[in-house]
Length: 462
Image 1 (cartoon, rainbow, N blue to C red):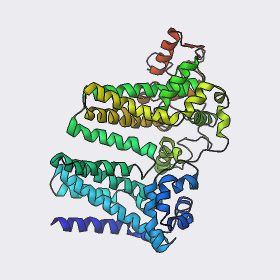
Image 2: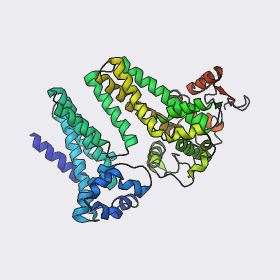
Image 3: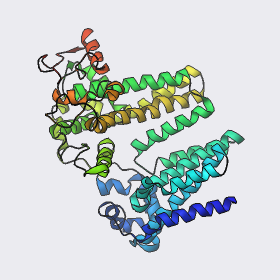
């Protein structure tokens, strides 16, 4: 079969499987809010530049959904057909088809042959996880991101062969454009992680890269676990203003929100743990396997896309009275920049090269943020679904040994929910709790005091 016939086969499969979406209308809320009710803006060509300054989603949802390229992708159909949904769905289908063809091309370039790339591209074309990106108009941002990332990888492969500046520039431009299709704070670390893994093929993975990844992971994860969680949220120990400031800065470098917002959401979680008012409970999302998947997605990452409730500040009224915390929270953008610049600078200095600086940015910066994100979010999702419950009377929290290790002791989550103000989460000798060991070290050198622990007779496991 000639190559153009294989391409036609892929196009035909996409049309047959996803063609019924062309008859769909709008889904409630997102399609109406983000497309139908925004038609006057989307039909105005002058809005193309405005979208980059104040994306329509910022005003429509009230949260930080900065994805201007998706907004621009709505404009041609809006100009041609207004609010009629057919062209909007047709555009989503064409974007997905472009991604399928690019994936096919990338696989041909990477593994060669004819059958394997075609079968893999066919699987990508019809996979059930892709249905949302085609049937749900705002879900197009997933397909758009895939298109730009695939172009980026193809350009990178071409650059490895020809060494031209133009192919390197295309790689970088496509990679940056991918960041403007989805929520940047989540997509940027994902794209950086993908780029870091891809860099192993060309540059390898050296000890400097490993040291920057591990060092920045430990420091920023401890900023979350010791600082944001055990100190600021639960007041499990006391310390000086300087230590509070440093812990707030390190936690902010994990890019999970400012310290005040993070603490407010987490205190809300404990107040309503595993009830419908819990901001990130995996429960109450339906029954069966579909309900489990929906619940896991919501608890892991979906909750971050919902608007903050009114009156969230009331959960942190005490912290707003502390100058060190208030200033550290206001400087959140600075900590993000430093969290990326520090490993990049160290990588450049330690290797004496710009390539080392780039790898430092990828491994110690973006890839590290990606890993800390998903380890932290797994405490919300995994540790409320799978694991042991020595204290079953409170909620659905679980002790999970995997995240007890990866999350610096936070995975002993059922223990924590039983004794939320305890500085120690690993209550048994074998329950590794690196965060508690750090608190003990701070107390030993006089930088922490009034360390709170549960009474021994209460901390007996079932």
